[in-house]
Image 1 (cartoon, rainbow, N blue to C red):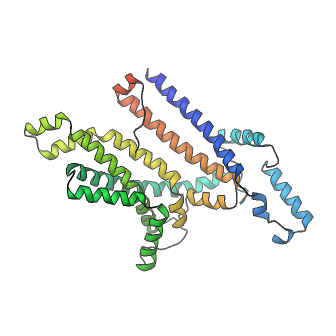
Image 2: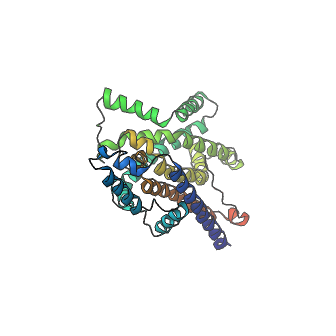
Image 3: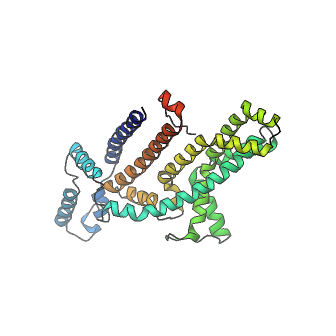
Length: 323
């Protein structure tokens, strides 16, 4: 039974990835602009070549990257390469995209991990506090703060923090290096942006657990309030862990704005630079990496639920709780 459900989820993930690859490929190809013209220039004077030599260079570049083939043929060739983990060659730099992304993945993962720690710490602390003091002044203030924070666009909070800490206080150094002294501000920014979702999840699950009969029975038997709260929190952990796991996956793909504004050398910053010059293979490689990460994390969470929860196995439903 478990094997059948796992295979079902795995098949669904493969189909999702296949459909996502088609959408990614078509959206990138339908974007206006010609990457060859952006790199070599529109006219002969842009790079100091005659018109004839320029056209020859453009034609050679298009042929090298398969841009002269029909769209279906381009997709088939690209998808066959993706299966073998070959994301092609960057039109802009001429280097393998797998190599370029691989050199930037550690920076993005480091940023996401530290940001996740910030988000989890804030989410658990304030989520539990507001659940225990529900309806009181601290609860109302925290919920109002979460609404304001969730409403702020990422670039607004990033620019505010950058202006205050880098320009006004001189606490943050702006450069392009992956250094610990440059990590704290983008990590805090990214963690704060995801914190409202975690606070809401922890608060909601804790309120559900604290409303169960076993909590009242435990208190009536004389158990300490904090012992009861700790037990309720342990029972509320599964959906909280799910939210945290999915947050990490979304941070990998959703840190584009943060990395760009803080000039953090991760895959998000690489994606923006590739988009600006219509580097098709690089944009496609980044998007596939992001989508695959989200699908794999979601799949692992569902399989974990299947293995850990007998009720889900009997019902055959391993839908992930996300907020």
